[in-house]
Length: 286
Image 1 (cartoon, helix red, strand yellow):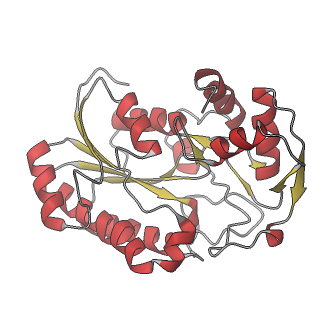
Image 2: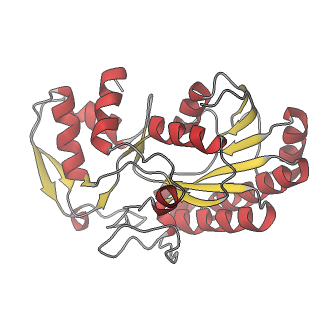
Image 3: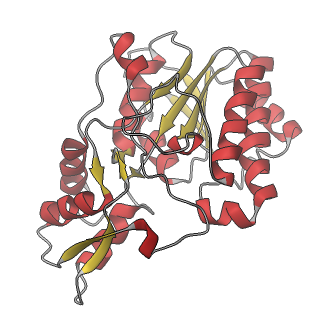
């Protein structure tokens, strides 16, 4: 974190990433806006909140992220992820605040045999991905001074996340857990994302950037690493996505290449193994 103390408004402050961001930027003048305090679906409310807080930077982490629920609640998904993002972007532009917005790998089709980079074409296959892409497009249209930070496979203190679910199940007795082994991605801690955003605060970089941890794993391999880090002995077996159908199709390829980070000469993201070890050490109970 730089020495400059900034006024920062964080939306979605009660969420898993939002809580980490509030802790990480505690030395700044942070206004933490959760759903009860700020209805991002109302342009008037967002404009008023930004006018009152007078932030230099808005970190927009509020979103509807329940991907299966988005399939059955399409309007709610677009209201939160598309209209909400547009409202925040309009308010930032109107009041001269820089906007850092959190997005997702779900804007891609999730196919292919290599990680997606920032200039790859988007082709979301879920309502969640479609609504987040609509939010990205609104931000680009309404607020030129923006960073869209795409993340994936996120976990952090307090959860809820895949890591927390596995830590719970790993301590229970029973038959071997079956975990999907044909989806691959970059397990990423909220701490790693927050640290990367702290670096971006000290730059004038604008545009889209990927901020997942380095390295890749399947959910099965990730589970084995979680159990090994906590010394859990419950058996784990690989399975296929087709064995556990869900309302929203999961991407087979969630990997994100950090091309923009590299081209700007910014610090690389930590490896997912390093971040997992740090997380388990600092938060042994999740």
